[in-house]
Length: 270
Image 1: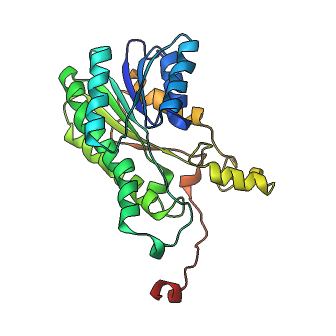
Image 2: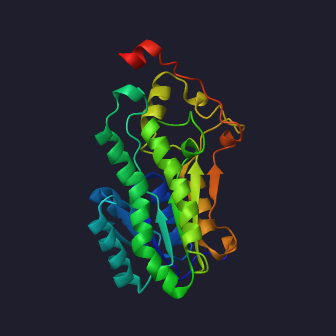
């Protein structure tokens, strides 16, 4: 691939996991990166890692679910780089992995939706005008296989990612004729801070080798494997890919088998 030399990039959720791996990879490919995260120490560590490798990265602390914070990080990127070429709206949260539908409340759902769905919408709203002005650019969102089928994540997380996939599709069509592309990546089980409880529990019981066994590759993924797909979508090599939700899941979504939790009717009515 030709790399991202000279590209001006915003990456949210860049303090760890997929976001950090992507920031490091993008900078190594020649991009100027604004790494955004709500945890100051984490995003500073990402910027320091890139600096040690000779890359260009600035760190900024922001909450992607707050409109004024999104305006601020977009404005900061324009101030630093003179414009924007790529936005990777990667930040997301999952909430408890196992919780009955009937034990959840609206505030819990609101928090998940605010970060996972409204956050990317705000990124599009404030960054897209700069891309439209230059009639080129790429917006990438981290969705999930949980947004494609049931059985891969908690209710609010799955619903937020399904909504994000639809947002990507509708946004791509809203930006018709502008030269701006909008795509989603749908990771399967990846070892990140978000999935740490799954990995910690499996390792505690000596069952780490069971993680990812439902997909045809029979393994879990690493953040760098998602970052490489994001790099592709950010560059000119993907110039004819638009409005897509690309599963990077070892083949899980080709069948997506799962076992029902079998919530009893009595529990539902209690």
